[in-house]
Image (cartoon, rainbow, N blue to C red; front, side, top):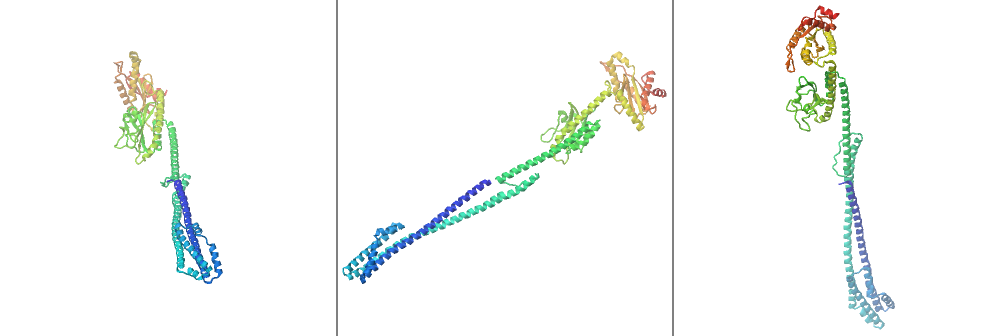
Length: 602
């Protein structure tokens, strides 16, 4: 019940009890007044009846004294008393006005009639005295009958007084009883009022108001200091204090939510700053290796509750190959085909566990997974890799959702960086590669030769160079057309591209001439490899328009450092050896000699 309702009820009850107590006191006072009135009425009745008895006795004494002594003074006194006497009704009217009841007056009326009869006898005695018959007068006044009449008068008056006394005592008893009862009721009401007041003080002011307000004041003080972790007191009461506690609770919840949002905002700001720094580093990467190092450094900081792997698509092997990992993931394999991942199939983020049930990817191992997340790395509709995450052992699953929203942002930045690197490599390949054979062009050859020369000098290792020319290439064009010649060049380029372990060591020098660099190959080893290449090209089966072309032969000039001079003259020395091979009949491998070295130096 609300405090206002309780207070109103208590106020109404107090007012009602006070009014009732006042009315009871007034009723008790009225009963006392009735008691006093009854006593006063009895006193007046006693006075009136005493007057009647005294009048009868006094007149009897005056008449007897006159009859005995004949003193005229007694006669005069008797006449005076007789003159004052009124008739019965007049004397009864005073008593009736005083409050005598008819039954009481009837007893007194009989006594007054006896008093009037005595008065007549006294008059007869006085008349006998006047007639000179004193004996007769004394006989009348002192007779037994006269005495009996006096006794009758006294009896009737006593009866009247008895009736009056009974009524008065009954009225006094009733008034006394009513007074006591009303006083008791008044005292009880006063006690109830006092008890109600004490209950209001204790239960309302102290229990329902003071104590909760004191507890809430401490909470309000701590909330004012932005200590929103303060526990709220448990107040189950439904009243104004409860409303206040509920409002304070809502304020506290809002404060906690605001602090949570501020923490999330700060975390989001720091994460976005971290992503921004990572993006800047990714933009400065010159190779995939640089990009992998940046991802391995920043990914654990951006999503610390997730372990993960970065996969890059290997076109030659048609597989997703791990480029790096962080925080020791163990659910996903290091290499798998692209169709083993649903994220790569669907082209969007795949979460097989969590709020929505989904199909787990085939590259996941183990009966139980740790909230895996697969995010494809795509740009302009082309898949370049995969970013894989799994919840770390012992990590709080509730923290996975806040961290998970940065996963796709991380993947987007890595995708853009990979796309930029791939675009840069494509543009460089377009500038450095021969469009027909896919081998490096003259510009790429110059750069690679310079790099390999520096490496050979630094490490003290040999460097060999093969200058290769397709024999009688013009005949292919003349006999079968330029398309056939292009097919021959592509076939020769394919053999040369796979002639060494190192990639990018085969180049198209111009027309039908090719160059093959062999870092770490001495002269003899390079010669043997050159013979294998010549033989392999001779064994090529080239079809053009459903017709097999004739076998292709090549001439090779070989030069090595340090056997054939300085590295900067290596290409010219190999070219001189090639000219000798062509002059000596083609389809052969010739190693440079002193004359070739001299020609290159010149």
